[in-house]
Amino acid sequence: QQPVQSPQAVILREGEDAVINCSSSKALYSVHWYRQKHGEAPVFLMILLKGGEQKGHEKISASFNEKKQQSSLYLTASQLSYSGTYFCGTDHQGAQKLVFGQGTRLTINP
Amino acid sequence: DVKVTQSSRYLVKRTGEKVFLECVQDMDHENMFWYRQDPGLGLRLIYFSYDVKMKEKGDIPEGYSVSREKKERFSLILESASTNQTSMYLCASSVLAGRQNSYEQYFGPGTRLTVT
Image 1: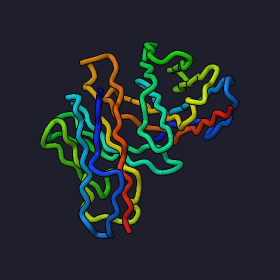
Image 2: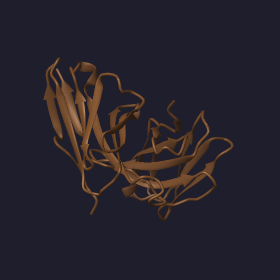
Image 3: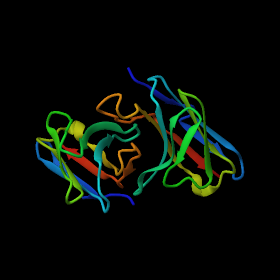
Image 4: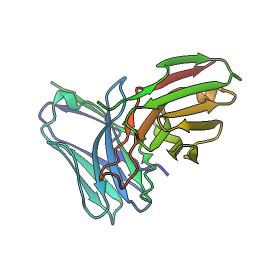
């Protein structure tokens, strides 16, 4: 079953912060975050592994609550280049098969 | 620079035709994936392969098959295309977990298939 992302869409002004949530009904091994700009391929942002290991970008961070089966992506001081659709992908077995959420469309205006 | 390429950006086929979508990666990755992307549904896994000649069904394999004869190439086959298979198809690859800590997936540019 697909994880549920919220919100479905968000519009911000440049410099504002954003939080995107990803919630699963099944136990999680890891959560991946990707960003897709219009007309382009999804690009990897971050992976959060069971046990707390985290990788990612500057100004973009994430949390992973194993008990609640949730992850949140935090974009700080958003830039115009952050616009796009964000997907979380959940891995439930460590088998590297991801189940992606429906996406969150983020629009950053000047 | 890592690269995943797909044979066509746009493809128009008729109902009932056999359709081949090709994907090639140059990163010596073990894993390869086929997804379809539809508005409001995100990316849904059709099939994936973790080695040559090995394949596993994803979440929506019905109406599709795959072939992986060489490590770098993964083909998606629509045996008899139908209008409900009109979609964006994305190929991806990744290293086998354990070789590196990160097994991020690298995506190709996608093929927009229209079945009329």
